[in-house]
Length: 337
Image (cartoon, rainbow, N blue to C red):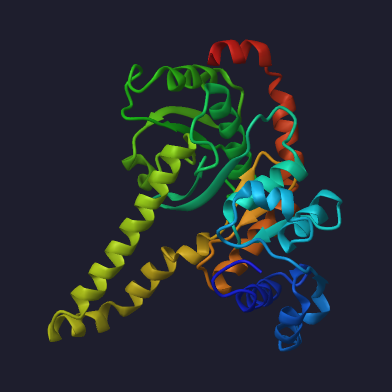
């Protein structure tokens, strides 16, 4: 029931995802009187779908604490309960981000060895695609949190993005060893000794993100969220500038006719709908947050991402990675402090 165009966008997104992967099955949690007429119009989706009627929904402006206390029969809570109880392999929502994270964290708990879950997403770079975390769940982080993020990002890059030997980097204000603050220095030392597949690059700067200098970008939620919003704003700015440029004169419009195919490729490569879906990594269950303003195509990509994570046994791979590291939690806490 979440999203600017819900529930129509959600159902149509599921129909697109079904075409791409006929093995997907959908359980829609929400107000059946609103859902059923929309689902009845999508005849090919019906065999792959069912509706669970829920009396309440979490509003976009609801505080996470309120959603936790009073949202026992909300569509969001019951969908996450389905993941917890094994009735579903993943939950995808375009609703209230704070409430989704809070309810997911309480019901699903964190994976063994993870103190804090992180919000992660992937996006295009000059070399392919990179995953970045945290994007806003943890404004302040210690060194151990950053190491946990690196482990989870490494598993995501290998299992979902298909990177065999991921390169990991820590965002900093410079690449020199003594740049930044002590938490970053400690995290760099810990990651340099960590036996993760791939390679630890060290510190990276903001312009290294789009270059694709690393496959896994690790940072705290404050910096990550600012970087993400800045990148989204820049992408929109470039798009508007291109549109204005090609409309600026008759010669420019003629030039667009010759460049149209190239522009279509560019538009497709940078289409934010292709990268829709922020993942709550570190939870003992799959939760994907879709952008609230996306359309059916964007929501289909979020559903496909959740399906890929389930199919690739992402949670089990993360558990194994965490167990295989054999970290000394007490020693790491002391180092982080």
